[in-house]
Amino acid sequence: MTGPILVLGGTGLLGHATSAELARGGRRFEAPSRAVLDLADLAALPGRLDAIAPASILNLSGFTDVGAAERPENFREATALNAELPETLAGYCAARGIPLVHVSTDYVFDGAKRTPYVESDPVHPLQVYGVTKLGGETAVVAANPKALILRVSTLYGPGRPRRPAYVDAILAQARTIAGGGGGALSVVEAPVSSPTYAPDVAPALLALFDLGVHGLVHTVNDGAASRLDLATAAVRCAGLADRVAIGVRPEPAGSLARPAYSVLGTDKLASLIGRKLPHWEDALARYVQGSKVRS
Image (cartoon, rainbow, N blue to C red; front, side):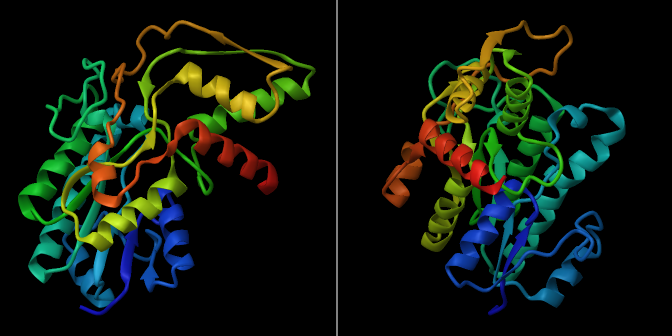
C-alpha cells in the first residue's frame, strides 16, 4: 500500500509528539480523531481502515487512566482498547503485509525486581490496566510476529488533552503554593520508574520503525526516579525550590496496586538505534523550560 502512516491516538501524549515528529520530517500521515475513526467498533474497523489504505499503522491509543480501569463499569472499555483493538490491528496489518507499531507499558511487571527490567523478564501485572495492556502485547505477538511493540513509562509532555500527567499535576500545585507565598507540597515517595518525555520517544519510535525492527523494545529516558525524586526535580527546574518544600506523605490506605519498581533497561534500544534516550533529568528540564515559554 502507498497510503499514509496512520497514527491512532494522535491526541494523546505520544500521539501528539509522534505526529509532530512526522510533520517535521515531511512525512505523509493521518491522525484521525475518534469522532472520525471509531476505534470501539471493531467489526467495522477493517473496512474503515481500508478506506484510508494506510501504508502502516502506529497504534498509540489506549485506555490509560490506571485508576479508572479498576472500576467495574470501565472494564469492558479498557479491555476493548488495550487488548481487543491491538489484536484487530495486528491481524489487519498481517493480512495486508503492512507494518504495525504498538505501545505498551512498564505496568506489565510486578515490581519485585530491583534492577532494570529487560524485554525478556517475566511479566506479572498487578492491576487491571497492566492486565489489559499485557493482553494487548500477547495478542499482537500471536497475530503478527513482525509487529514492533514499545514499552514506555510515566509519560509526560505537551499536548495532554484531559488528565494532567504526574509532572504537570506537581507543577500546577507547586505554582499555586508559590503564588500564595510558599509552603510545603507532600508527595508519596514510591514507585520508582523511568520518567519519560514523549517528544524523546517519538524520534526513537520512528527510527525503530524505519529499521523494520519487530518484537519488544523498552523505549524510555535513561535513569530511574521515584515519585519524590521526580517532584523534587520538577519544582527545582521550575525555579520554585526556594518557595516550595517537598515533603513525604504515606501511601493512602487502599491505594491502587502499582509496581514499586518498574525501571526499564534500554540496552536493546541502544544496540538498535545507536543511542539511549537522554537522562530523565535532562528531559524534565527541557520540558519545564518549554512549559514556561508555552504559558
